[in-house]
Length: 476
Image 1 (tube, rainbow, N blue to C red):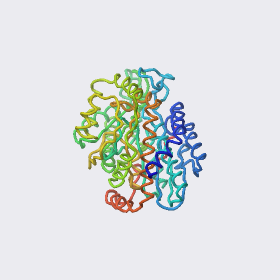
Image 2: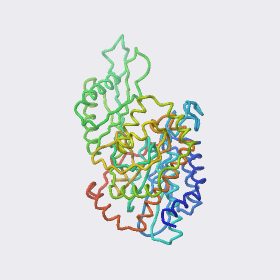
Image 3: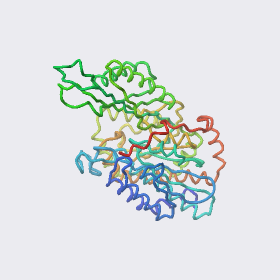
Image 4: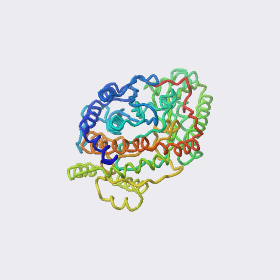
């Protein structure tokens, strides 16, 4: 058999194990840094498969690694498993139906992500055992991607140091190598402290923290005209100082996300917003307090490794969706709005080109391998802490279909399909592609030299954490 056939068989032989762990994580959805049952399920499999497991990485209880093999090359495979708040949904159900009211759910498919990467790591381990080749595979259990930037804390603590390269994937609606960057993001709290007073009898004695917060937001609205078109600034009130209109609010708290195409630009934008907060405090004679929660770097796709990953994807072939899969996907496709379908068509055109977009315009699901389309400095509007890994070592990733075309991220439809047969098919094919890419590196480590050269050219070879050293993982 060919290496490709070997890898596919290694994954297929243990397919039930990987789909079961995906379903187990799906059925116990946990928010970032609280994924105790989810991490335990993945660790259990790693131990059964003979990996040396290390837990509590970077001071995060649910961060872990599993290592197998010896010598070079040292290859990292990244897994995630955190859920999202208020996205509980019945599996495979194409009408909105919560399992537990307001409970978390896997609206980004990280149950499948963790299991698919696990499939890859185990297949590489089995290949190393069978061939006696030199090489080390490390599965990284990376918690808190959604709200905690777990990989950034892990990168700061050196967890990815010593890797020759890293691979990852993400559930989506197409089988595509990722040739696009992502936005860096800084997450920060702005608090204001004022003085209470009777709002009618003695308003002159009060100093309103809520006024300061609102003035800050107004200042930021005017700033939006003077930032790069790709930058994004989001905010939410965490504390409005109470509910009594006749009391001058002595406290207010805002949570800001500050995104930009490069982490250096995000830091510059943060400095400008910090000045606006200080100005708002001066205007209201209140005190402003700035607390950086966390942050993450922009993703730098390594073209050499992504080309290799694309070769592996083409060799394992398209995701084998059958008629039952297509019918299930169509039931979810029917729940989408015209705007969501139009956005899907636009994304297909960007990732696969106009011909593929036209081919799948009226289809419910797509298992075909998309071509690799490097997109230079173009950044997708979202963010991922895989970016921090890409600043430490050459990194490549892809998406694999686990849902119908056009499924919105962070939606009940995504949760439902992440617990379905569609996710099973997608995660297994993702595992095969990642494993084959890793084995290609093991079989021919010379590919690492140009990958490293590209990495050094793009990053300078030095990782600078997006947040200060005194910032700790937000475990509360």
